[in-house]
Amino acid sequence: MSKLIPALLAATLVAGSAHAKPNLVTNGSFENGLTGFTLIGTETQGFPPVAITYGSASAYPTGAFGEAVPVDNAVSKSPDAAGKHGAYFVSDMSHQGLQQSIFLKPGKYQIGFDYYAPRNGFNNANDATFSGTIAGVTLVSAKVSAGPVTTWTNYSGNVNLTTAGVRTITFQFDTSAAPAKDVVIDRVYVNAVPEPATWAMMLAGFALVGTSLRRRTTIAA
Image 1 (tube, rainbow, N blue to C red):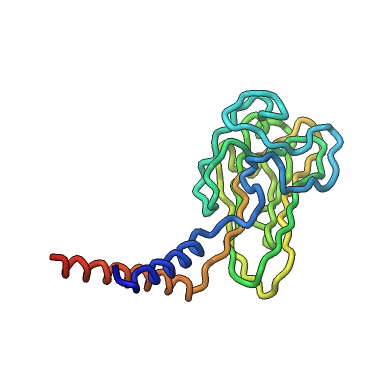
Image 2: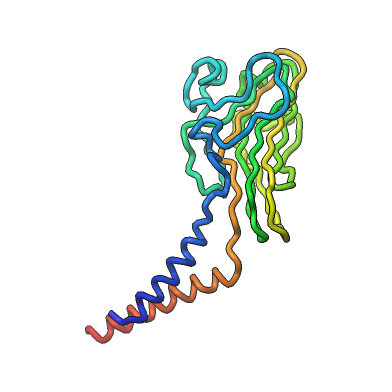
């Protein structure tokens, strides 16, 4: 094998690892409970946010009060595969949320999360307000009654940071009367977008490796 090929493969692997875009959010799919997130605000009913199990028609805190929430199937740019758990917001007396701080370098990022409103909560008479903000960009802030319901939906966007620093991820859930509507979220993500030079390196690496392999095949023939 030519000495050039291993070098090209190495360059391609470096570019490919950048293309993999690992999730910068700790436990963004809630497969480890609420690890990585901090509870903020107040909740006076005794039903703070928890990680529930999909497909389980069990009671709180492992299920959505008897409704089996399906696995997250939203079309998402999250690098995390759909898991078995999601974060459930359900209290009727809540001004509470989840928050995580992450350090981000200057650059472009894809951000987002997936959202689901269970039917039993959606049918409750009293509304809830839910908002999701990532790195200063509010992706959604609306009444749960506005929908969607029983459909996994991805809320996403992009952010361009010019300075390095700590950025926050905040999900806020507000209710004030019982019984109120509830929501589930999953696959929270922040992905670094590769620079154009990285894309060029990756494409050039694949092209040169392909050319070298074709030459070897011709000589062998």
